[in-house]
Length: 467
Image (cartoon, helix red, strand yellow):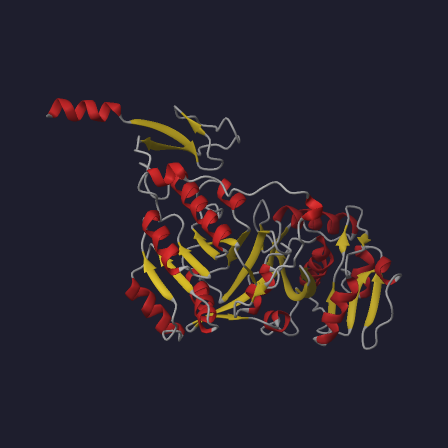
């Protein structure tokens, strides 16, 4: 008996699969030979399983090849999710048959948001199925009670085996479905463990086939790694139609929803939610919300109007410049690219004669946002100069512009849209590149101050040292 068990164990084989691209190798390698990623080869058990007749007979879609000009072009029909910010990121709403992947840190609010969306769709008369592999039905009921949607008629299924899930899908035939999460479901005919590369890939392929053939829109919840990327094979992001990332700090009440892939709309839109005890609430007036707690009359604070897709948004860029008592001055940046900040500080020291070599500099974007566009360069420089000279920027001024290595201020895009948002919130003076004013029409109620260099901008705002 013991000898037979040893022979059985000897027959089992293992292989190593890359978690980034899904490439397989008979032995472990530090670097994946296909995608070049390091330390991504994971050991999986290769187990021969009998091929089921149903799976063996399953073929393709059976469609015929047709000329492109004969294909009817119809516009996508969007179903409102009940969350305006989610509809904005998705491009207008949920598309029939779409496969959407939602990722984010644990506890960020993925399940809460999707449960609210399911409750709204169920209220609209849609057949909704919520599949959970992590929580029991009682736990989902308790969360629904906390969110005030306990009277919803959506169907809840707690299951992890894909064959049972597929059977329930064919029986219920939902219009919308949520799978929470894709790392917990598995196919029993495969020998690998749930969450492995092969299980995630095959489970997602089965769900994608059902979504496309039956027209069911599906949300897949995905876990993220410690680096912030979606766990599992990279091919998972290529299979789905939409990839959404939930961002935010647990210390802040605001959550940001971004689309890094969207086959039905733009990937530049941003959704802002507020996490409360009764669930996720959309933040409609983001600019007013982000500036509501701005310090009045304090130096080192400058307002900048950024663009997230088609949405202009005013944010408060804060800087603190103090005398350093260390051999190497400290540079701490939160919300912006640290290398870009170092570059701008060097430009100010070279072109505007601000001595930064013996100063500690701390930069922060209030509200937990991340700014990536170069149009925020001039606002950061003015905030640093304001803290350096200990003179506050006037409360009704907004600053925007890109700064080059020579200290020049370059033109930025969509200046009129930014100016309209500034005027709406009471900012009557705008410091901006002079080149933008040549193509802009005059606007009542706002005064533009065009500059060509950083030194000119500091002079206009009376932030030159020694004056």
